[in-house]
Image (cartoon, rainbow, N blue to C red; front, side, top):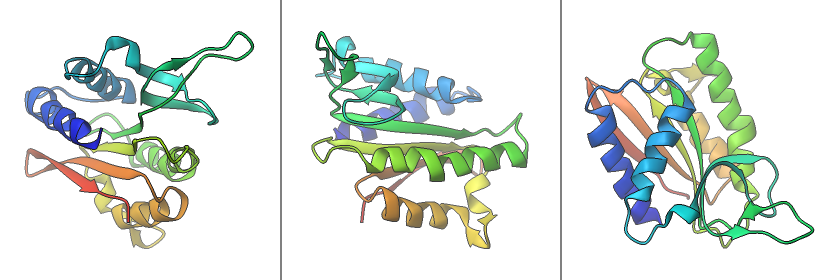
Length: 179
């Protein structure tokens, strides 16, 4: 699943971001990823879910890949092979305070959700799109990207971090694998 997600992120970069599409909201990114995942061999439409419940986890996840679990006395949920949380720091249209709210949401909501997923989930990941260069700034006197990695190590040590960022007008994909 990790290799498949790498392929999808590279297509996302080449087909959406490099073409000039402005990602403004998480839904923009999730929609593109949904579309690109649908085109991957071995993935069927029935396996991809957006803003959904995952079995044995609280909250909703931005993207989940896996079969649907449905029992007559339970709410339907996804038995995930992959779970991805998405955050966007758009290049335009958002203030530093709005970016800060998104950043704190990653630290306090997204990473803890990923951290409690069952060990058999093949890929737990947070995907951050940083068109604003926000992650290069500071949070409590620490570099935001480094602080994010340390927080991931504490609360979601199995989670991968993918940071897609704009550097000198070129989109780059960074991958911080679990320690």
